[in-house]
Image: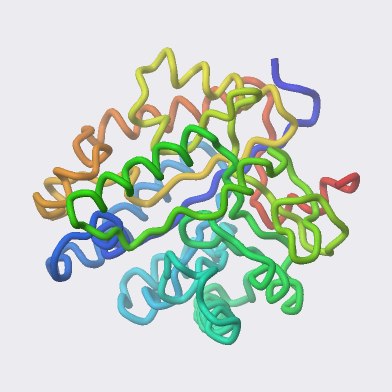
Length: 316
């Protein structure tokens, strides 16, 4: 049963096709007709999904995409006008953000900040790092810019182990992923909202910014994100959602690619072969997400954008 006053937030990371190309170490660059598929094809489907559900979501935007795709920028501007939140997902989506020099990290945050502010009509107050990996420098820079929250921590043991295994397997066959395996300290991070410590983003502290981790199940810390919900059989999906609803804050993270139609959206065969969720029919993925939102609502969950969460958690 959902606890009294539990709040749910739904966010969508708008990673472009190029991001997945880098993860899977595919040669060259993605075809031109697939380059803008996430904003042009998947984003309108999310807008429709959220309109039917009557909720406002948070979209994590890569700043460069607002320059490269005028049509996508216009769609995001319309969503911001409709009350959805636009948040910072860096300017170029570097998976190794935490390994960059501090001035370069600041540049990634600031350039995206300016692009998103121009698109949305107001400055973003939230951040999510590529690959769910933050550092003391990242948090410090966000605090200096008066960001209300970071939502990068993903303290899931099974996810971390699976990612490490896949990347090790790629290295064994001579392929180097564009992603990284981050610090194992994430596995000890709190699973609920907390204020991080200076220099220790995965420990409780007294910084003014609030960390809003992605939801995992209690005890086993199974990932409860879009990828797991759209690929799991219905009975398992329902159990994952119910488990998350036993906590006072449900932070449901999705990706734009979760509502992709691999064929009609022009995704190349090389990526479809390596990205399992692309092989799921769009109809099935849409139904899984619609059912999830309905279950949250029926259980009494109250939907809020991530920007609204820090003010509702005064005891954090």
